[in-house]
Image (cartoon, rainbow, N blue to C red; front, side, top):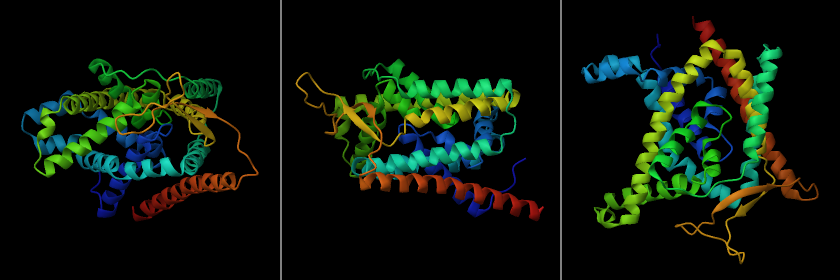
Length: 343
């Protein structure tokens, strides 16, 4: 039974959605970590899992109020609204800073992930042979993913649908970055840059009463790709949440151990000191995407140079990342105390 939410709770849900959306956009960071650390991961998974046969029956039977209550509608709508707003606002700001101050952005994320490993591990008291093995498997998979080489871009619609299903795994699986998986599948620029920009431009044109984009084959193709990707994402969210609900119910400790290992392994992806390797031709010229941006192929990691002042600033941002998580931890504890004393 869900208690009525206060205005502040609702506002914070939108903010949590904003954070999840921003995290999902950055390769190496997963929205699921935000949900896990924000303390609403299980509610998120269980609410998604309610989108099932019974929910559809209620919806098509015209029982909208019951349908809304059954799927925990307020929670899902506020959270998803936050994510959508984020895609068109916070993620634009993130893109801006990633272009200009890349090292500091990665450092802050690195700190946040370090903080979240501490946050998830500190109350986990179920280490035994099974959970330690599960944690090591998670760790190995996480490290392996960070060293894979990306594939070529592919705009086959069936593959795009599959990309959609896989990319939302970052929202439901803490530590698995959907956008990094898209880089590995070769479709990050196509799906999270080009198609989002095409949608942005299309909205702008519609707003001005200009419908000429309907004659533009390339734009329509990009919008079709975005639609198929969105469908794949929705299908992925619902199907994965059913699977995860089962796993969380029956193997909660093992799942948490795998997640701890996995997030630790994924630190390699967000290692701040790395050079971006761009796509080039035989003569060393860099390929650009349709927006004139260089196409990223992979990253080459290196050790920090301690004689450089930028390195110390980067450590400062790592510390800020960790502090953000400790503040969340403190907020969670005090909120629980407050709720406990109100009962």
